[in-house]
Length: 182
Image (cartoon, helix red, strand yellow):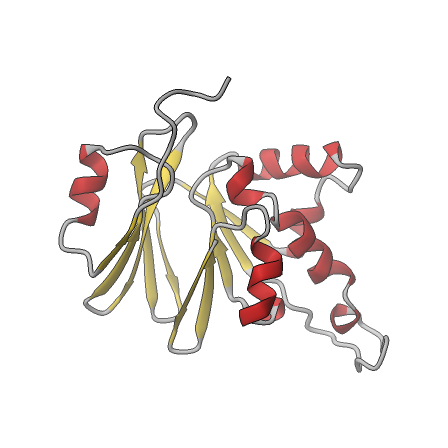
C-alpha cells in the first residue's frame, strides 16, 4: 500500500496485508479520502476488511457518545475505487470469513471502474491502463498539474506500461511471478 497526499487530499493506493496497521502510523484512517485498488489479488485488498471494521465499529464512528468520543452524524466513509467485479470479490472475502457479505461495501463508498475511466480526487486526476497479469490488473496514474506518479501494479515488463508511464515524474514498479503460482 502507498499513501499519496496532495493539497489536503489523502489517497491510499492498494490495501493489502499489513497496510492498515502501517497506515495508522502515518495518518488516521478516517482522514483518508479514497482508496484506489489496482487489482483484486488478496495481497492488494485483504486489509480492506479490518479497515471496514474500524470504519463501522470504532467509537468515533458511532452516532452516540462512546468511550470519550462525542458521537457523530457523519461517520467517515472514504471512496473505494476498485476494478470491475470488486463488489462480488469483497462479498466472497467477507462472507468466507464469517462477516456480513456487504461489510466492505457498507463501510466505503464503492465505485467499480473500467480501464478507460478517470476520477478526480481533490487536486488529483486518476486514470488506469490494463497491464498483463494473472487476472485483470491496472497500472494507476495520479496526476497533480504536471506532476505524475505512475504505479505499475503487479506486472512484468510490457509495452502497455512503457507507453502509459512515458515521461512520468515518478514510476513506482512492482513485479510479478513469471507464471501463475502453483
